[in-house]
Image 1 (cartoon, helix red, strand yellow):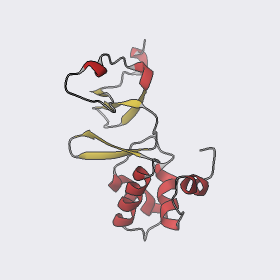
Image 2 (image 1 turned 120 degrees about the horizontal axis):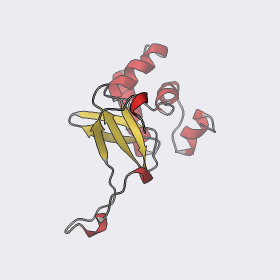
Image 3 (image 1 turned 120 degrees about the vertical axis):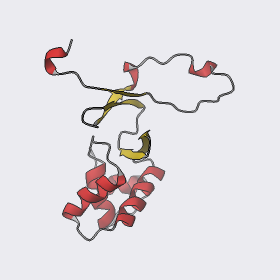
Image 4 (image 1 turned 180 degrees about the horizontal axis):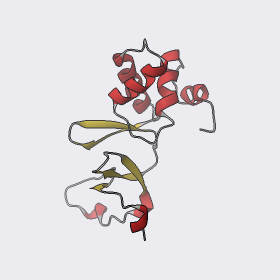
Length: 137
């Protein structure tokens, strides 16, 4: 991040607290697309007294203020993504890892022509396996 985490929180109308800073230091700098429980586990390594409720409430605040996006990329699994720019996702079925895919890498056509739907947002979620280094084109 180019600005400090406290400055980033303040610029989004969030008063920095020790707990919010601990959550932000992890979740705003990860590419892992963690669940709330994964964030809680990681933050507890450095901040052992933080409660699960505090982490969940902080994540929801960050989503409400536009610092994170919340995605239900698979049934029953909600993850948090600090990349708030439009992009798609690829889920590696072997590892479970979620990878960002640039918006322009996927060509979706005729969304505006869908009958009876007023689409305000969309993303493509792809599932498969990452190719090994020897298999790359």
